[in-house]
Image 1 (cartoon, rainbow, N blue to C red):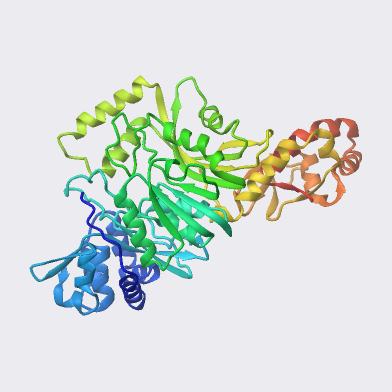
Image 2 (cartoon, helix red, strand yellow):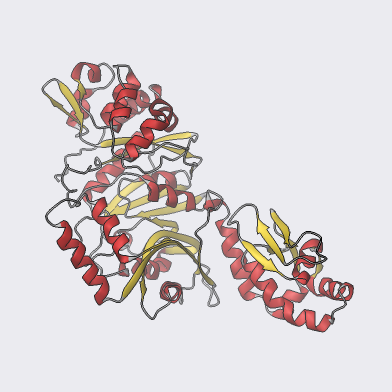
Length: 517
């Protein structure tokens, strides 16, 4: 696909932005105009309900059909609200036989004080991915139109739009402000838009020059002027530079072929691109700086995936938090990405499917994991790395409380038994106790501590830990509190002091207790 986009003049970008906002071509405006039925139909690649919902030639309907549904509109209707000739010169529109057609997808993407909003119920992009939620700062994302089934396959330099993965990463980013931020593998620039609200300066990189033009257009239409773009692979464009915050939705798809699509695949084998990003990131982070990325990793026979990914982080000097959110077997994984590139029903489908499974068999791959990797450059030899799995819903956005998660794991890792017994701890906010047992029984079968917010963990505890949770408020050291609990429960204080630290350390690492400063 040739790079037909040209830089948007500031005057033209401002004019188009005002037109979009005045017509309520925003997340909430699109959601309300389409309605739940049309949104759900779009997720099934069915356009008829959406076309019915956007009929007529008033502004929002025309903009939706043109930019969102990618349907041709009459030239007279387009010219009534848009500077068609100038937008065609910039490569955003094409005029053919009395009709105007969009050459790119231009979608609203709301930003809230530099943080991603919550996805609204029922709203979906034409590719079925959720829209981000309402916010206070409207943004716009420019990308290549989604290739629908029966329309062929994407071009190698296809620039994918903002979707579910984009929203996931945006909700993970820690809050600012910071001085410098890097969006590595920017694509359509959606993460650069989020970073622009957190950082004084943002650098957005990509191997695909077409992606950089899309990012520049997204920034121009979103009123963002603190993002610069650079072409190159991995950290090559920023060699020798450091950042306070690095985010990346890298081309992590694991395939036996050389990279077919730059937006999803690299030339590195297996999950090496994610491993390489983790290993190189610390030298580009300021002290205390964060690197946050989405990743795939292999589950190989005879190996624990936790050891595999944990090894990437170990020795970096960074505290790490790795979370696995989903696991697919090889067949599910292959089907997902063949469907992504619209290869079902093509002559190559069966051959590629078979070759992909052959590759996984040769490598001993039993499954593929998807999740998040967070690094904080603590420049410490005893930096803690926590690797775990979450499949349940958690409080969003994660970025608001993510530093507390890493702090808790780091604090627990550093506490000796003696230091823990002399520490002042308090029950974390939002933790409640649940007792489960037969009605009327004198003692519960289980005692649970449950987090009502944040990561929403649940931990089964004993009577000592439950009693400690009921009395600790940070005013007294743990040791004397345990002695008093042991006396009340008629247990040996020395034995209680000996066996409690390991359990309490785990509860601190998981955020049920906090060590008072």
